[in-house]
Image (tube, rainbow, N blue to C red; front, side, top):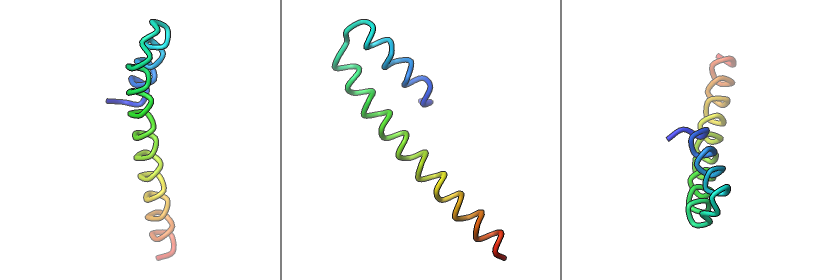
Length: 53
C-alpha cells in the first residue's frame, strides 16, 4: 500500500467518524514513514560511501 493511499483512507475514515479505522491506519502510516526514512538514510550513506571512493 502506498503512503498516499493510506492518507486517503485516514481522511475518509475521519470524515465518516470511523475512529478505529483511522487509528489503525495512523499506525500503518507511522510504520511506512519509519521504513521510508530508514531507506532514505541508508541510501544517503551508500551515496556518501560511493562518492568517497
